[in-house]
Length: 400
Image 1 (spheres, rainbow, N blue to C red):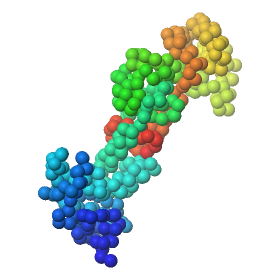
Image 2: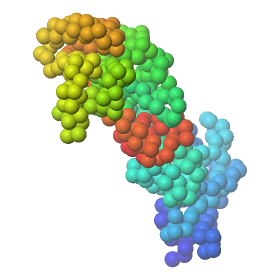
Image 3: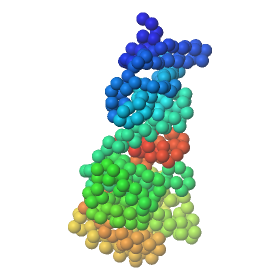
Image 4: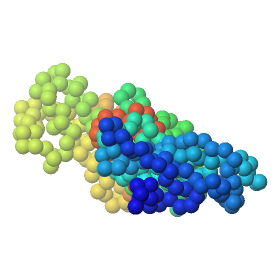
């Protein structure tokens, strides 16, 4: 069997395509396969599929193919242009590559497989290609996969922002709460991100009216965006975000008090954790602080925080009464950071209590955010926000 016959079979070429000749350079470790079509060969129009179109000129093109053993392999071909009676002059689609790609379909499939297991920078080094070219492959196939998504059944969404790179660079992520799946990601963290999600929802078969529940933090931008864009949506304020704000209030009380109570220095994490999560050392520190310095303001703030956590363990019909008692206690605590936090909860009262109906929290989003940060660290950055969004928009989010 001739080498050209072997490569024709390996590439799965059919008439009128054939391997004209091969060039192998052992020193440069490169194999070049030159393809051609038989004289008088006819082709289908790539737009309307009109048959029996003859070529009237050609353009030389090159595609990177899978390596032949350790040798870099390229396909070269005279790519014909045909004149379709319906569509005019069009470049023929070749069976081994998609239009405008510098890679064969098999090479792109190999890259997509690698992308599930390793960072793109490592892939680029492995296949000896610039990472920008590989990102173009991922952009194409992820966008193609997203085009096929159906959001017509989405009723519950979670919204959260995460940093895309160092500094004040953020993206907002929208998640299908039922499936723990990223629906949409976009740069920014303002109300415009909600509008952008609305447009994307419509493009995938959804309507703003179908969104019944939305879970977010107390960002005024998110609240305004959801209220203006999704008229049927009830907002649940994420309990993890509420507890984060309470922890910040407790820590502010500690920082203010440690000016007069130096024993509080280096005790920050003692007050941020629940008692059952304290290490033995932290438990000892907490006990010593309570014994040595009685009536600590920080200890009172800590107890107010722990009591608030009990809200989420109440039966739904008792929740509001519990919250009202807690609010009275907090606002009469004479602890300014705690009082400010209690007023914040009062301003968002309905959304805090909505949890008892929706049972929604952004724990899913916090988990995804952790994956994002881990992926960023592993990849040592994604060069651009678009690259990071491409990873998030993968139908089955994979950390790279």
